Length: 247
Figure 1 (cartoon, rainbow, N blue to C red):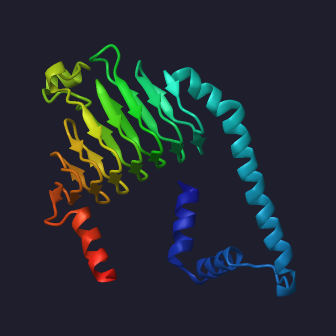
Figure 2 (cartoon, rainbow, N blue to C red; figure 1 turned 180 degrees about the vertical axis):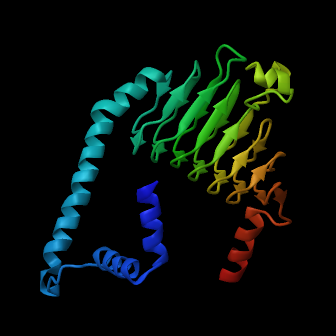
């Protein structure tokens, strides 16, 4: 209590004494060593070595620890997997990873207790950004050449039942409420997009950042907003316009 009150008085500068203490505190926070600019190359080298050490430590950790652990948690892993972090996998989910997949940073795959063997599949040459969350009770399928930006959420079921008493008792949703999700080839999910149960994202479709997708997105469709709505144009029409301008 006393320390909190003392700090508050300094922040408010209630008296000349506390005002002087506040000025001293700010001077300490903004203090910089008077190092001449001629030494900048030395500090640039120090920063480079710091980054290099971090990158090497990360690669060694992934190669010697992360990948072997992930291999024990997956049914199959394709060739040339690139990992920058370790996926957090919980539950009896069966994970299949294709060739040339890139996992950027850590993300989570969690499975419900509704079905015995839920499946999570990642196609070839697909990218998954850091901070994504995949909740699978039955099936989430990600196709080839898919781009999923950071902090996306994809789920094939609601984690809890609507009925309050069932929720309090720790119950699960009914199996009929589990609806598989499919993200087809070449689709792109923008940062923070949310894909709700039963949704299919069509081939080549684009989902805007922070969009909440409640319905299917057709091939080449562009979905934005909350709730997600389809734009009148498609990715193919945009490409056609560019080709016409180029001619």
